[in-house]
Image (cartoon, rainbow, N blue to C red; front, side, top):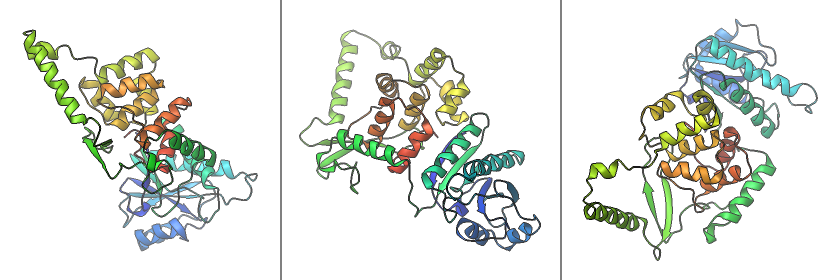
Length: 361
């Protein structure tokens, strides 16, 4: 199952377990710790009194009480000093131990805050990298839905140089002249005098694509209708039946995906895990040759297969989509492929930082 980065209040996330970034006493404190104790009610504090505290890097579990989660897994993150006092290994241990405890209790889903990045002062970019590294390593061998919860009002920071490079790439490639600067509030939105064609997604995990076009350009729906009429005329002119015409349908998305998996010499599990896609969804795609995925899912598989840009476009076309210079999401994807970076988790960090839909499901 995938890793999803979401903006939310962790006390309201519905999953089997949520992680509490606690202090060593486990008796409540500020920030996430205090919010979880308040939402869980007095029962949580009473049980925590029986646990005898917790050492840095370790994890202990309690019931969820009044929370929507069945369990609370408490872990104590390191206080940042200078990065030379074992902070990284202790923080990594927090994630490893929490995931191990969740697995022991048969949790199918778990939600993490960004441990130690608040009052404990761990640099957020480094804390994020450690969180994603450890969760991704766990998911390579295990099936669990993992949420990384960023509090709604908090800023989300990726590596400053990466952010700067992506922002520059967007600025150089975005086709809307009045929206060229990526930090404008309206960057990436269709112009006021443009119309937007929306093509519905077959899977609810991604938003519908918007393809802006000015009034003085050919309207896509007219082009599509003209193509349909031309094809229909050809069918009748050649006295070809509709069934015969349908038999000539090109390779589908599902067929191309399975062919590419075989060509790459990887297993199905390796592919859907690298794509950050749920096993059940992959099974649907495998069993239905005409399955139409969302655009985000189609791109996720192209990333997992490490396809170059032309093959990525081909795979997208099989699903009925395209990459566009008028779409910030598409430009970010092009940036990573052009730079040979196929790490779906790092790509999702960047997409999240630029307020775009994430890859996978």
